Length: 484
Ligand code: SF4
Image (cartoon, rainbow, N blue to C red; front, side, top):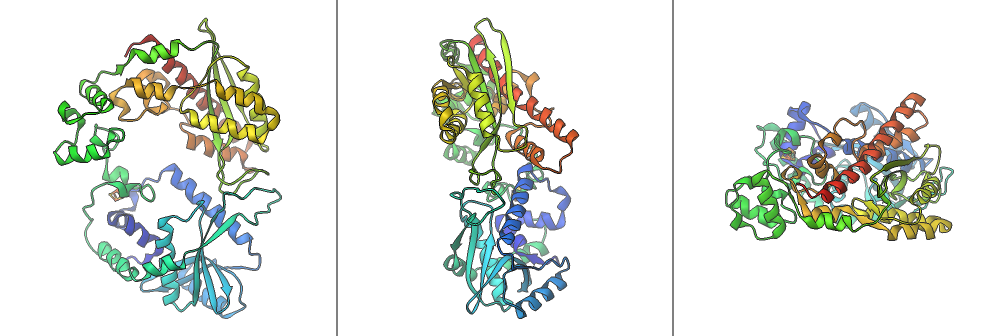
């Protein structure tokens, strides 16, 4: 039978079927890009936490027997911080991120790249502490070291103060009694047949499950009741009444106007567009600026005066439409050699001039980033704040006045665009969403990236961001033409 580790018990806690598939059918797993990015951030943060304890010892034996032996030797030797100390008890293997010697024993510290302690960290740490304790380690306290978002990068690789430590010993103690039950349950699952678990909330909580395409092959097809916005309770009622497809739902079962619009459009296959969308847009003046930003955030900030997880803008695209209908495209993409904020803000202020509506899609994002830049560069603040006042959000106009059944309950740009201008779909682009844009820019920043690869990534980013603002131009024109 497959051995258990902390990760496997946690996977079983998320979903028994997920653990069973991981062990018996691993080839069915499809990892999402953000899972890979999360692991990369976790590794980077782990390395950094170690660098803050230069007297520490890393147990890096690949082989389990060796790692257990090295840990035992290290614990008998000089008292110092240990990284990846390995313990086994009750049929479970764990590797502790960090052991810190304290009077009478050790503090067990789990290092996390998140900005606060999450519920799932408590179970994670409880398993570590339980196994280490059973294996004979005197655990004095259990702590989570997480990223402190108040930390400000000083440069020169000085990251003292990046971590905040939370003592979770009481929470861990409250869970320790349950751990033998969790272990037994996971062992039973692995020894049995594939569990018959229905997809549900557990498929994305606490993390996206890599077996979603196996469990829900028709996930992105069909019109399930769950696509109704803010309609969780309604969806439960519809399912209980035997309706799994909106096309079969009688009109009398829904009451909210937005739900009824979705129902009508889903049944008929015809889009609905209110004339008010066009009226609101026709009332705007010219020139019109269609604007979009791309940003990058780091658990470990790399530029002085930036904080962890702050979204640093590195790229903008802007289509400028004149009253004549003539369109001009402008763009900025940081060169990747340093902090992009100043060049981003200066170039943006220049292109936006002083007059004309600035159309964005989901305005809080661009507004917040401009506000952040205004606070960072007081000399540019008047121009940035004046531009903020000119922002017009296309998203609420779309949300209130337009629906096509292929949007499946979403008004994101990527959901709306294919129903209006399918030729502009993102499918063929190398960079096709914000996460990919962030990953591409991170690769550009990497000193190891070859010049040809860097040039290709820049091109892909420019094409992607331009597509976003062109999409807004098309959506606005479509609404103004009033044809659905
Ligand atoms: S997709 Fe959902 S139901 Fe299927 S294994 Fe994953 S968590 Fe379980």
